[in-house]
Length: 511
Image (cartoon, rainbow, N blue to C red; front, side):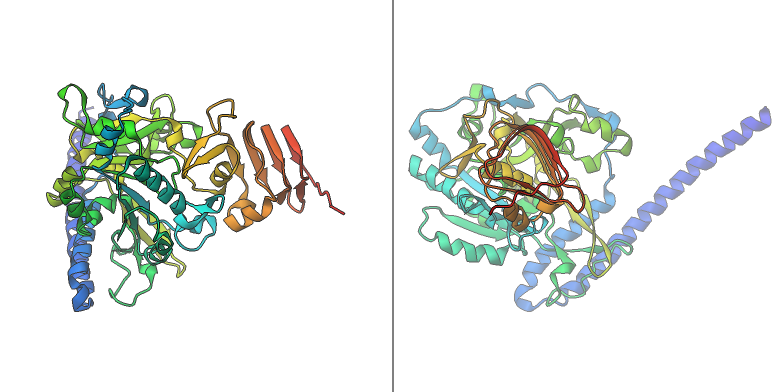
């Protein structure tokens, strides 16, 4: 027994020494990786033309800091450290005051800047160019509808709320061309580009770019919307708007058609009750459904509000994270931030956004990683930050053609660029729609619908295979249409499908 006891003791001592040695080795390896990266960045900087040197210095300095955070960071949170959200950290939207005084609303709107994230391409939906120029409704694009919303707001209240577009190097040139068509629209539009960071070889942890000039875009990437704060500051627009007396910005994705300027939220920020200090940051959250289980949620962690994304969840707790009963809300990415607090955080380097590692496989066969951050993760760096639980109607993103189908249908009414759920729909939830891979690309999707079906009474739609829709089709309840491999299904014009499963071959030829 004694002998066994001694061996176990030696083993545990050996394990501690081994663990310490492993940690020291990891730390020294990370320091070496940072040093090597700094050498590579200096080499890249030496390839810059003199007129663009200052710009690249700022860019690569931002990237170096992000890389250093990546080396330091723990990939996941410690699950046991998650605390219950403090009372009042998430406010119900229905408790916010609705203001009727037009002069008060105008005075508050004069302190607002609207920012739309416009860095995304429509590639996942088979489109070339910025996603914001995809037609959503009546040949109006995301950008058209956004311009219409702001113009209506400005006319109604006699104000001049500016619209700012954060482009990426992928979308900037095309967006500038498109903006020319709005010359007569009464909206002041500003644009700036988010950073352009080098992709990293997954094996060597070094940039794949060898020069700052003349390399193809495959070597570079835009580092997620968390880059907004620094890029906005570096563009000079943050200082300009502060000088103009602006106080808050409202930031949202340009493909979220529910993200309109909300007057009760603006009033909550600018007109705090009972002498409370206004929050420097507000995140709109909404209740999870089965479709949103992967969405980031708010938690209390190490004494601060924190945005928890699925990538930061330890593997053993992913199912718990997805649970609608434990984590009931998710981040809509509709964010309100105080401009002077944003400046303070950028200048004092206080933004501690978690680093998201996004692996990619390039056409040339190389495995790379992109280091990114999410704008909502900045919540922990702002004082008095809160969440507001908003209605689902403020979250209408278009990520797939199934989302586009809902917005193009009679489920939504459109008024001055704003989309609202039709009063003719008898319940407030939207249908669950799953379109198969034949509908993935916008061009294919549009060709398969001779007219957008009536969806007012639809609960659930699943379509798979070679399926085509005629004009004036009406879908109600649960409809499942499956064309097996080699089959084709044509839904005839004027069909009413209610709680139906259609499969096999169905072709009605018009003579």
